[in-house]
Image 1 (cartoon, rainbow, N blue to C red):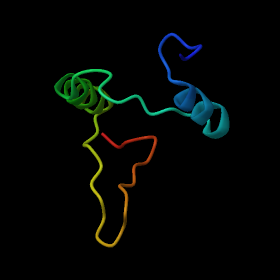
Image 2: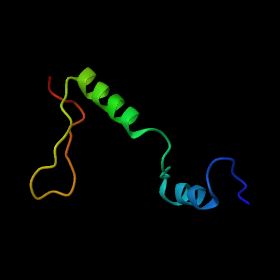
Image 3: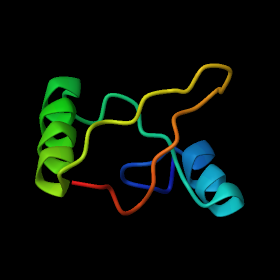
Image 4: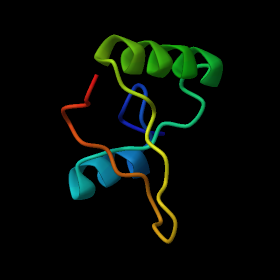
Length: 65
């Protein structure tokens, strides 16, 4: 039995080792998409797109309006 109320021992150890923990199915993905869209709109930004040949999207912290 885990000594943690929410995280498994493995998740807690990952957080200690890596500084983050992945929590699966924590909340509805549609709700997350709504909040992400709201945040980009409020910042006057568009969601980042992955440039050709790159494995991840690039985003500048100060989005142009």
